[in-house]
Structure formats: structure tokens, C-alpha cells
Image (cartoon, rainbow, N blue to C red; front, side, top):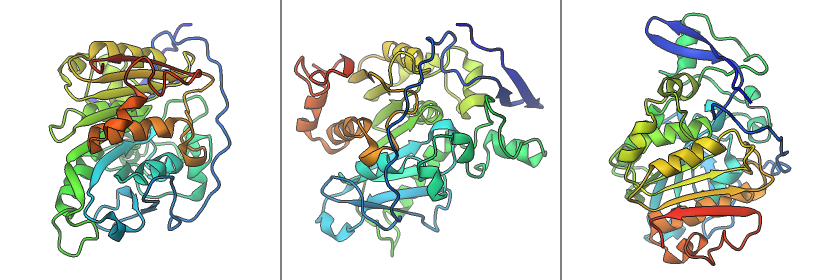
Length: 349
């Protein structure tokens, strides 16, 4: 199948948006649309969620209105335990921090501070399968914001069109900078409990490309790429994800990384394979799940089948929990025992 030709809009030297089919590969496999599971039931932001020891809430903070925070509801129960930081980039470059709420709440409940790109949006953003209905407002410096400034951003992207990104890779660094300041700020509920020696950057689709860009930050310890991967054409990373990274950067990226996709029909499947092959010298996992599409399981109850994989990776690499490594290590690994999962690893066993 040939990829569609993209028609691009530019202002000066800035390439801002392209119309055409969203494709994560130059020659994607024939598309099979696996329907996502039913969305999790909506509960208020103050309702603790997750199966971990520290059920989590989500909230906004006036000091960083551009992001949404997920953390244990009862911070006083941590009893000296610190929270590693996980910064998350949303699929479709959505600038709404509650878009992936069930998945991110489950992660946070295991003792993490999760910061998602974008302010908190409507309840509908958590369940709708149509990302065009949950884009949020453009982040400052994003391609969408640049288009809006010159009156060229449509109210709703056309069906089948590739919308201008509403987020940027720079928002990952913004989150880390804020966490560093908040960890020492007098009066902060998070003072002294953020583990800044253990930071992960992760994201889905567009957010995965942004996370790869952000993983070059020396403060980052591990990377998670979900239903995503870099395009072979280096010029495509900015117009589709507002990221300044390309395939050649992967060889120099020396943080443990996990690449998760749906079945081979997932448009990100081939790019994730290629990115995994290009990295070396660090623990790496490439896994995919049968009968799962590009939208994954993120909005299912407790984040669906993808959530335990994310939790295990983060517990291993950010909390030093060796029992969590059994999800990925050895021929009898946790994922190896699940018939709907397929896994390859490098520099792990």
C-alpha cells in the first residue's frame, strides 16, 4: 500500500501542518481496525483510582497550568517513599492532560508522579475515540498555535486530515523544570518527595515521537514509546509531532527503552521495529499485542492490558524493583507466557 502524498502549509521557514492520512510508516500494512475496549466509567478527578498501594487523583496546579498532574491521593501515606517522575505525551498531539486518564492513573497509583501534557479537559476527552473532538487549546509554540496566530487554524480538522500538532516536545522539559522547582518550594505539597534522580519520558503516537526527542535530556533515565516510532523522512517529525529528532539520533540515545504497539496493522508497527533495531548498548524491549490497534488499551478500565506492562517497566527502571523485571526477562518472562503478546529484547538477559 502506498502512502498518500502530503500537502503541506508553510509560513516562512516553518513547516506547520500537512493534510493527508495519518501514517506512521512509508508503506503501512493493510489496515485492520481492531475496536478499542469499552471505556472506563467516568469518576470525578478527586476520586482515587488504580490498583497500586497509593490510589491516585488528577489535578491542575496553578504553578503549571499547561500540564495535568497524577499522584497518590494520600501523600502522607508515602512514609518517606519518594515519587519518580513520569512525563507523558498524548497521542494525536492532544493538549488535554486527562485524555489518557485510566492508564496514567494506574501508573501513578504504584508510587509515581505523572505529568501529562496539557491542562485538564472535559469528561468526554477521557472516553471519546475521536481525537479530533478532544484536541484542547494549542500549547504556546506549537504548530497549531502558530497557525492560529495567523488565522489559518480550522475550528475542527477535516476528517482524514492530519491536524497541526497542539503540543510540542518542549513541554516535556517544562514539566521536568517545574518538578525540580516544586521539589524545593516552601509550601508545596510535593516538596521533598519527587525523586528527580529517576525520570521517565513516555508517550503514545505523536507523544511517543515527542518522548524520543525529550529522552535526549540528560535528566531522563528511561524512555517509553507507545504505538509510535520515528518516520524515515527526518522532515516529517516537526509537522506531525513538533519534535526535532530523527532516526540518526537513536544510535546516540543511551537510556533503557521500551517500544509497545498493537498488531502489525498498527500504523506505528514498522517504525517501532526500526527504532528498536537502531538502538543498542542499553536494555531494550520491543513488544506487540494481538488484536490491538493503534489506539491501544489506554482508556479501558485501569488502562487495559498496556498498563501492567508500563507499570512493570517503570517499577524496574525507576524504583529498582527487580521483581518487576520478570515481566521482560528470560524465556519464561511474564509477557512470554501471555499468548497474545510477542516480545523481543536486547541487553536484558
